Length: 160
Length: 257
Image (cartoon, rainbow over all chains, first blue to last red; front, side, top):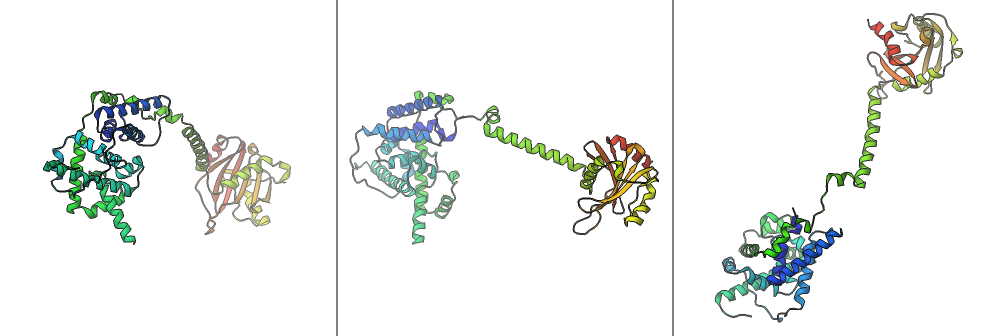
């Protein structure tokens, strides 16, 4: 069995959250695994944990470089409400992935890794090469911005 | 200042708090969560995170990508087979070293199993027996048992008695000398099988000075010589013959009968 560090379904989901597009996610996912297979055949698999996720992350960032970039706007932030959970239930995974993939890095990586619910914060710091304060800020802001977006969706008012 | 820094770190940790409480492996994170547990803000955050994680968990995997999952060998995890472990140079070297240590230990243990107080001296005297020539001894023609008086009268050696088992043997010669620890040793040569007897002080406890007694007869071996040793009244008697235990055994069993 593959160990938790190389959980392949989670690797695909990570790519999906990073890119917000199933086709692109598949491309990065397949390329990453093909490359891994070649390296395995040559006996050159890296020894460090989570290397597949690290590889996939760089490929996702590389792949999205050529995409249209979102405008740098001041995004509204709201406090998390007790109704948030029910608001999220009305969301589709693809909508969430689009929202996360539109976030600037490292917030995008932080949110994607965190909501996989696969790694603890120390592992996320390791994979994303972040400091605790940065990760904390990314997640905290991400939640508040997502809440604002959910509120806007829920109320039906167009918000930027 | 320090408190402020601590509070800031706790806040940072809470923002990264795991979605499932089962993942609270880090001590500082556990502490931060236990302090915040129950607060409205933290409960809202946890519910929010759980709902999002649930949504992510249901991200469907396209069949083309799912094909990779069955091909476990695509990204093989290096497996440690028994053969690989055994032939690993480090394991091999350690195993050989352990075997050598175990062998030496077993050899020492077997050697020590037959040890008794005074066995070291007895072994040294076996070497002496091997190098002694009859001309080195004062000629004495008497029964071995009678030499106790001679040792006492002439050399002041008390309790240097030949046991009953060997008391009737005719002697050829005897001498008294100091060994390398300045202990007085009596040596007797008898006609029977060119056997030699040694009488030497029994080993004593270094703290109390008490004699370290042992019951019955004990054998020692050295370079083709065998000795049967017994202790009585603080003096050890050793009968020595060139050969094996079975050469001495009849004399000892006779005595037992």
